[in-house]
Picture 1 (cartoon, rainbow, N blue to C red):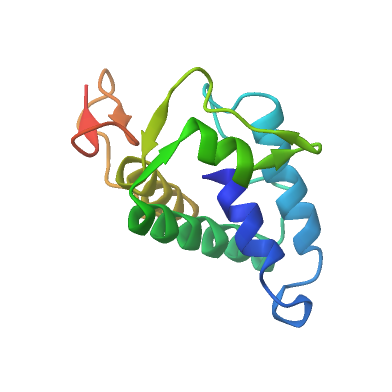
Picture 2 (cartoon, rainbow, N blue to C red):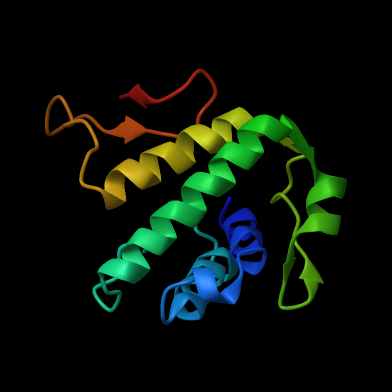
Amino acid sequence: MLLEAALVHAETAPGQRPPRADVVVEDLRTQVRVGSSLFFALDLDEWDTEQRDYARSIIAAAGRRLRGHGIVTSAEAAQRYLIDDEPYFLRGHEQVAGDVVADLAEAIESLIRDQLPAVPSTDRRWFYGVAGGPRVR
């Protein structure tokens, strides 16, 4: 999803990007490099409002694209996504479902907008990007 957002950025005309948009995209790539399975640092204190809005918009666009794409195979990901000029692989998965990733993109958009639903109790957590849609455990 983050590399798809980087592609959205690359396809956006420079005049349509906010100042310092490249910093946002490099921060997204850094999340990919460090293996953003454990956490995302996507609402950085260093980002201004325009950068935060831009991150939200390109992640949302990436989610919509992936939902429309359907299944992304490991071979497709290796061809489509490059990080440091090397093919990106799906961390051992043969494929990922675009709609599952799109659910996560929508959750990230809501997080950046401070619109996530409240966790029902302190010992429960929301899980996004999982098959069957968001869940609480």
